Image (cartoon, rainbow, N blue to C red; front, side, top):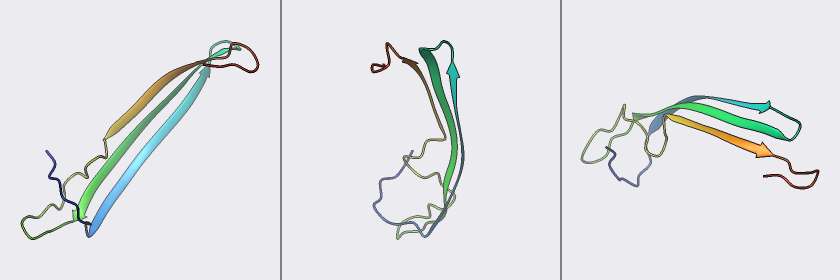
Length: 79
């Protein structure tokens, strides 16, 4: 669970990796995919009431991924 605080942390560390790929199945059909891994932590973060050091940063998901088809109907239309 995260605590809602609108302050700046003293220090944080973010390390991540992202991979993207595209597979062309036919001339007009392909699949796009991506996968990302993120480690986001506060390394120094103290306020008046508590110490939030070594805690995950909010709104920074550990994993993100997507898979999307792409189809070209003709030279000017795609979906």
